[in-house]
Image (cartoon, rainbow, N blue to C red; front, top):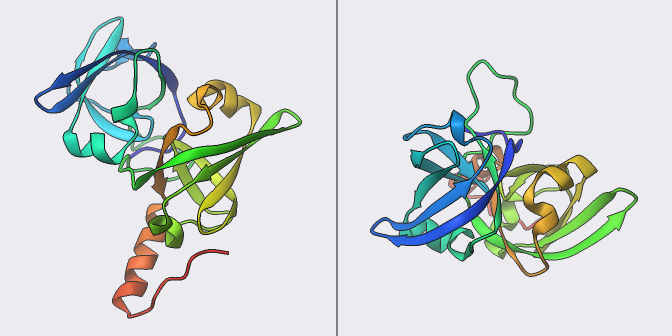
Length: 203
């Protein structure tokens, strides 16, 4: 379980085919604190560290994860958001993020307002019942608040600190991003489905 509060930005230095799908090698200042077997959220995807040293870490990406996340499109030099799991004795900032990506979206627009940035993300319509205005959402592992939403896209506003301390400043229009909807909303929709109610898309 994660919070969506990014601890560091890592750099992809290797993307190699492996029997498990792909093996990623990342450089990060967090490397000395990680050991094999640790969980690590990489741009919102929960992975397991398979090796770690003073310079970086390696993690395997399964074929299914390659298919349903943006990790399969990573290239050398790409920036990724990193977060370790939430400790039981830690304060909970952000929101509950599982590291289980629901789908990929695409960055559609970035516009600046003062020192902050408005970011528009296009998302698959199957996620529409789970995205609500003022609700929580994770984009590339970052806990954000939905400021506006329709059936195909949602807006979030990024404060200067988050813009500078995550990979958002390096993402280009059209790039894929990992989307994880709020787990509480998923359960609400599931209960409604079991009760025979049909969820409606947000307006």
